[in-house]
Length: 331
Image 1 (spheres, rainbow, N blue to C red):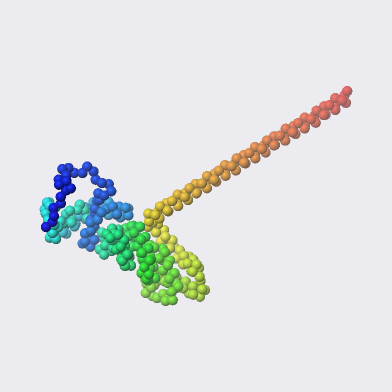
Image 2: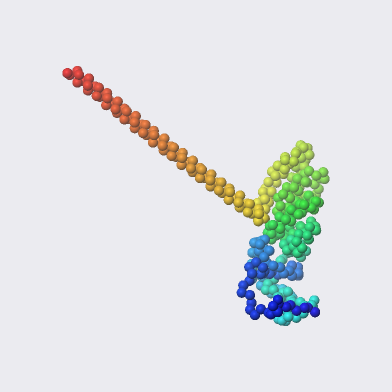
């Protein structure tokens, strides 16, 4: 028998609360993944991915249509409105579809991947459970965090996979890099295929692309014949696959973590301020140069004016001397 709940003062409140707590009154959302319903607080989705919220949570019309479809498919009987007051048993649970306002259908998502993702988004036992995650579980997290732009979780998944020795083969690292847009994995995978003793076979080429396999085979030949050091090899890979790597790095900007986004914006602001300061210095230097030019022209004009005056005075002196000489002669 379920024990009755008694209020501290043995009385029930006579009126509803005057306001909802802004921090701990949570709104919930229900997801449907492969016929499994998940009911979760919305706040983590709102905090972690604007893209996900815009795509799924904010589309009320889509949510209502999803609810309608689920209700049509459900064969659960209607539940009595006073169910809350009855004892709880395994055969007397509320229909989860009926008690929620809407259901978000996540198409193309595997339920095992979603469970792994939720264990990172909502860790039930702190970080302890995540310490036992396998590479495959972290790959599930990486898949969905990339798909939905949960960038901090994506960054964590990449870091965790990198930290597990032997988590991926060189070829699988390249395939994963192309799938999830991770330029460091792409460069590292290419480097490993060039330096390893095992050759690049047809199966590898089919997985990474025959064109890429041929380019890597050419690099392998030069690397082993010419004895490149690590810096030279890194430079050659960057040059050989410049278009692919540059495009991937451009895409990676969409996956900046909050800290990376702040650092990027701060760097942009500093660069803008540096350019603004440089423009101010340029305009100031230009103004000073113009002022110097104007002063030099003014001085030159004054000097020319003074020279003309001196010439006029000299001419007047000469005329005066001639007049004096003529007057002496006449006298």
